[in-house]
Length: 524
Image (tube, rainbow, N blue to C red; front, side, top):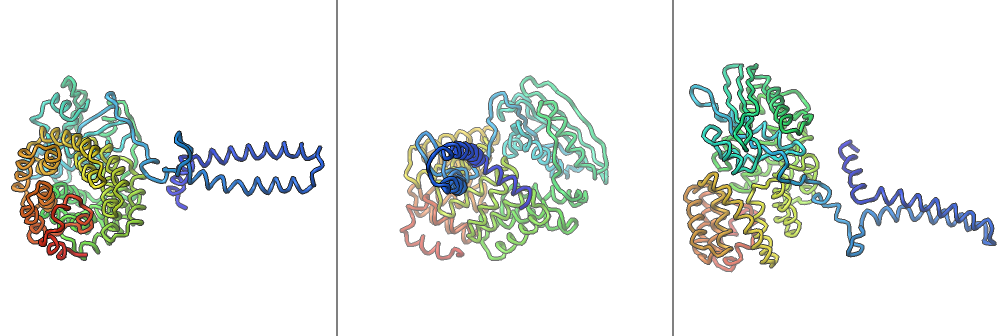
């Protein structure tokens, strides 16, 4: 058994109170045997009675252990223990008003040709990801922070819109094998500069610079932490790392074309650094996302499996590797193994949003809607700005005929959408999913406007176009809904058939003759 598995198993024993029960049983058994020996000495009972008492005590021990593992005592009586669910064994920090918090804004490109934006943005994202893992620190997600311009945004606006106490601004320039980074930490409550740093180092020391910045931030916010290395092997070549960051910048846009461009860059990264585990995981994501959202082909499935296996080989300690594998396993409908991967990812990094989110999606595909709800809820707690994990709960509550709950989470999700649109009014994904929330709340006119705007702005985004089909199905415009669904198949790219089958938003058009024809064209 590996050390990681041993720690997980020990944690399960403690969480399920097995250790406590075992110790208590031993103490009680010893007392009973001692008392029994005294009583039997002065009684006329047969001599073998003591041996029987010992045998019963020994036989009862494993039974007590098994029962304590399976059941728990609650105020409502004895019931099956829930500690086997990762939601119950993984603690998340409570986010109080006084919790130290920060937003990392996209770094400014200082290059003369303004062609290093991807690199500067990548540096900021890497620092954000380091900080995200720091216990006791709340970090605004990339989804919201990177929609603000670090140059034009007033510090007070950063604090107000992102609900953070500090903002990290920066600028970067890569020239040959030299790197210059300037960063400033600002108190968003009063606009004061807490400190500025400037680093001029060889490009290969980019990781050292990132750690120095993170250490300076955590020290200022009084949440010091000792960082662990991302990769157990040597750091990647600077050229490979540059390609990796470039690929990440494309992948974050989540469109068909950007996904292809990201894949090409990750492949070039791996050609330079064959053992770069994060690059393998990122490459696996591009195939997984293609299969789920754009093009459900056997090739994408096979490549998702192959590349995620390489990620596990070279970076088994990273949550990304396990999530990429879990996604591939879900596409094969091997839900049991996928669950193990997602749980391992969460154990490695409980604050990794994608692990919770795609685990929840897997449970939807599997048809376990109640468990999916629990996982989506945890995803929404991990990333408090995210609206998708909240609004998808409304859909599941509707499927479970819990309309009051559906309305409750819809209002919460819409609030998150409006907060994001206040930062970026042109966020197509926020407009797209926000339209569902408005429709459920009876605000039809604004809902249709939001949906049509998002679909017009992203005609080749399969997620947005599929959501359009769902939206118009719910709105009663069935022919329009079927047109959108067919468009996803013919012009945009395939969508996940299992998700479609369990999607209650499609219930209004399932009996339509065109629907059967469209579904038959989906790959099995």
